[in-house]
Image 1 (tube, rainbow, N blue to C red):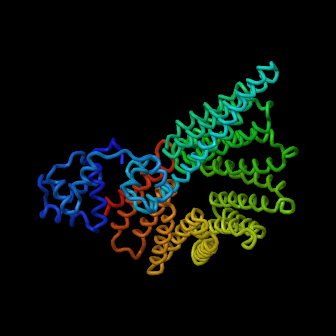
Image 2: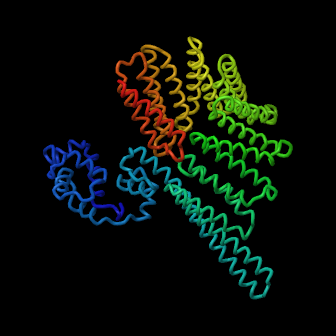
Image 3: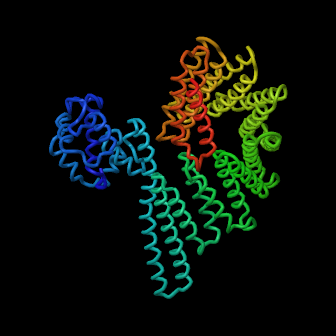
Length: 592
């Protein structure tokens, strides 16, 4: 509860809590409070309560307040407390973070707003608790950073005292050495303070501020060691990258910008290995950005990622750094594969071919004999590139490439076994299922249905290892892929059997959303919503459907939900796809 909130907002929250505690619907409370369809002001009672609970009424009328207080047994003392709220005790808030399950909903709302959630009332209990649990972890991390400052400050005092003693002797060389160390420690304290402030800014979504704080911290070391700003940025950029990867927004772009800043003052010859590592990380950030951006801008970013990987390979040579060379070559292949996916026609096919060549090269160093696990990892990615080639190649040649992809997955699974590497086995099995599903889509008749059945079986096998208890995020991803395969099976299968498969797909998507919540995984939540829209569209087109309108309306609801997350500035590719689907659904509904 904060002093900036109006009495109406606080009163509306109390009404919501009391109504839920009594198990009353809006209509039931309206009748109980006002005894008729309208309240004393002539407005619909249900509507007035709804607006109050949403925080849209800053000054509710006295008659409305009395009627609702009587209906909900709200005491005059409670109303007085709402009119003169006390500011929250920061120590109490910290205790609440450690006992979220025991906190009142009002306390949870206050905490959620403090962490940047503007409308916590719209979240379910589980989503609200999940959001605050994650924020509590971040909060505890930066509290550790703050607490560590005490030790550094104490050490600084000892250094200054030693410098004073040296000056008394006098020993100018020792004074200089000690004052130089004081300079370093003071810079480190300032940097750690900036890091703590950045850690405080990121959970609240203030990514630009975090970037400025971390950049300033890095620059503060320029007078101590010319290379230290680049080293610091090398460590800091991952914080921004991780935030962008999880929440979307500007984090990814700011991560790339921070690396550009580091490289601007770091010639390759000064520290070749650091330079190459920065180029590799820059390529990863650019590649991730490019995968989220539509059209020419996204393709340009992927091209820049390829250039950065090639730059890193000027240092990470096969002769001098074979392991780094193979890893970077594989990353290059991944970027080329992404470019190929986004590029039409012969140019795209050529890029995919370059990706396959890069994977083959990496496999010459990552051999099964010398680097079994790395070989299996490269073999799996090689299979993915073959699968992409097969998807873009017509006729028998495409089918042959898809078959080679399945063979490559099976080869990887000879090393990545269920017994020795259960998690990686499950991931590779899921990827093989993706290839089998693609084969099934491309193959007609009973053979295609059999391949889709193999894909479903492979997904289910992976899910025996990737459980929601032990691997919730991977489990949700695999469950979503299972839903896609079931949707394809159901669309290809007529009658009740096909409808049942589509129903199983619905159940799988709903299960995935138990993990892919909007609070914890907003981007993945939106992607699942978009896939559910495609599923409802398929149900509307199935031969058992006698009334497509409800399915099309459900599909429209799902895609509109996805569009509340897909940021047109930072995720334009996803936004454009979902917008096209929305327009298609609207056209289908209009044609009914």
